[in-house]
Length: 439
Image 1: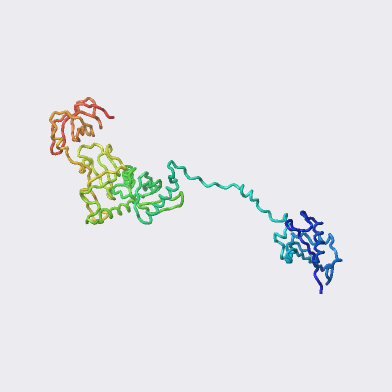
Image 2: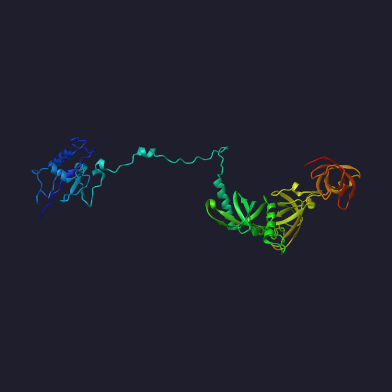
């Protein structure tokens, strides 16, 4: 029966406690180590040298055999069938022979039997520490100790969260009308600013109802709508979001003012409270938003219902131009004196401002003496008629002016009383002179 012949090479590690005290091994050191192992009666089998025999003391190792065995750590198998069995030095010392057969199918890969120069390159810990790291952004330094501030991104995220919530739950939001755009199709859309975000509202969802004659063209009607919207610039309006498109910075929202107004009408006009009345009813004082101002009237929104208040209902005195006293975007207290309609679509309301104050102008008017001179301010001049607001809020009308200069609005004048009209609570007379021009 033929026997295998193999060469045994023992790797002497730097850390092994060897009798010879070798630190750097080479081919000669390996040969000496092999001879020492041969002296310890380690059996070497080699089929190429002894057919069915055993390698004894008379057999010798030569340098050529050592080269044929190959590098221990390379785990190389020769074509002639050599098999390298590697032993650990510590196994010899402990009396336990632990061998690892190195073949093509089982290459030697243990760290104990691998030379240091053939080990995979290990990363340098110092180099790993020197690797630059991206520093975390420092928190915002606030003026107050421990104070918290919100970045613009945080504000935008909160705004879009509320916009999304309005779309899901139908909760009305309030924004400021900031722009009117004309689409390529010719239709108008209103742009509302809400917490820095643009909300588009189509004209049909703005709930602006104008009487349209049959002969009026679309362009003429759109021009009227545009003029109304221009007067509403800066007004605060309610809306409910109907749709959101895009993501990130490309997000856009479309809303309806009509839906918000109808919802408010149901809540404040058609739903009774514990007292059996709705929240808005005649003779109640409420707060209203001013949505538009013209010379002779203002337009207010009272919880989803719009109405106009003319100058004579704004004050017991004379107001020539409401634009001098009221501004779009402001709020004003009004007194409701009539509510009609039983459905959200048919509700109308009438209110005024002057009912909030007592009317004492009649007493002041009756206290005037004929031919007396009273200081006043010109409120308007129309077709030669001069309207004056006298001291104390008394309304006066003059048909003549003795000053060579023509009086203008807001001029301070001296008014001569010639007659008192009790029915209209107005003083009649003439302007004697202009004290101060206010051009």
